[in-house]
Amino acid sequence: MSMPLWAAQPPVSVTAPAKVNLFLHITGRREDGYHELESLFVFTEKGDRITVAAAPEFTFHLEGPFAGALEALGGAGDDNLVVKAAMLLAARVGLDPQVSVRLEKNLPVAAGIGGGSSDAAAALLALNRLWKLKLPMTELEVIALQLGADVPACLHQSPLMVRGIGEELTPVSLPWQAGILLVNPLESLPTPAVFKAYHAAGTVFDAPLEDAETLCANIGGLSAGSRNALEGAARVICPPVADVLDELTRQRGVTMARMSGSGATCFALFESLEDAQFAARKISEGRRDWWVMADHVGAGRA
Ligand SMILES: C[C@@](CO)(OP(=O)(O)O)[C@H](O)COP(=O)(O)OP(=O)(O)OC[C@H]1O[C@@H](n2ccc(N)nc2=O)[C@H](O)[C@@H]1O
Ligand SMILES: Nc1ncnc2c1ncn2[C@@H]1O[C@H](COP(=O)(O)OP(=O)(O)O)[C@@H](O)[C@H]1O
Image (cartoon, rainbow, N blue to C red; front, side, top):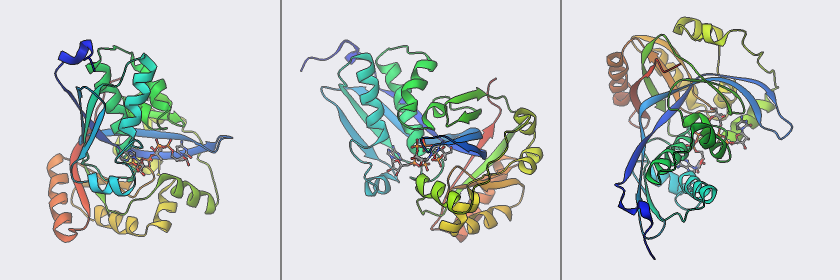
């Protein structure tokens, strides 16, 4: 098979960071069953890693500490969101997907931190560069939404207010930065199961916030004036969520602790990265069966 013109390009690598919902309100439900959200998304620096390179034919290679977990959930082949993203983008621009795609899976799977969504978004960003497509963000967002509700937001990799089912995006500039510690009890929690439990517990939708930007301007206000609407449901179907939150709340320098997305990953914000790293060491010593990751979040561009 002949090689395409862009075959001389060097490989492109893009990090797929963890997405953290600092708050997650559910404001309604559409007729197709999807929920309308109001949520503040922030992104870590560390995450999965996607590398794409020109190749004679399409290949997909999965590696990293959570490759086995993803394989067990059936995500090692054509169902991987990275593969789907590559196929969708190639079809959209009329190219043969002659590309090798490598995914280093460092983030836990089905964990409320959008690993799959972030991988799909990173694959779109990487291929947009490798294939020199220069598609604008707005066009990538339309393709991304076909891959999952969270995928358009994950293209941005910086703080956003997210509404609708995930397609209404407002970049926010947070006047603070914080250390963050993510902890997952290593029980995967599928998103649809959590939404189902949320309904079983009796639905009370959150009212849209009057001034979300002011609420997010400081962590105290954010903690007191918002919540994760799925946390109660996740605690019921996955009791270790409560243990993780108890452990996080107990750490030195914590300013806020909460679950992210549909769980089971929970996060704590700290005054500094050092405090988050200290707590990471302490928690991993006591709970070797949990996944922990310290990083920092905040700021962002307006
Ligand atoms: C809940 C959130 C919050 O950020 O995150 P995660 O916990 O998945 O990380 C997201 O909205 C998840 O987005 P994403 O993971 O892309 O969802 P999709 O694959 O599109 O949908 C998975 C399932 O979740 C439910 N779903 C998802 C999004 C939404 N706004 N309403 C829903 O009801 C539906 O049952 C759907 O079948
Ligand atoms: N690259 C990928 N990484 C993670 N999960 C993936 C990927 N591709 C497909 N999936 C599937 O998507 C589902 C949700 O995974 P993930 O995005 O990690 O969850 P969450 O949105 O709760 O954080 C999993 O059941 C998994 O099988």
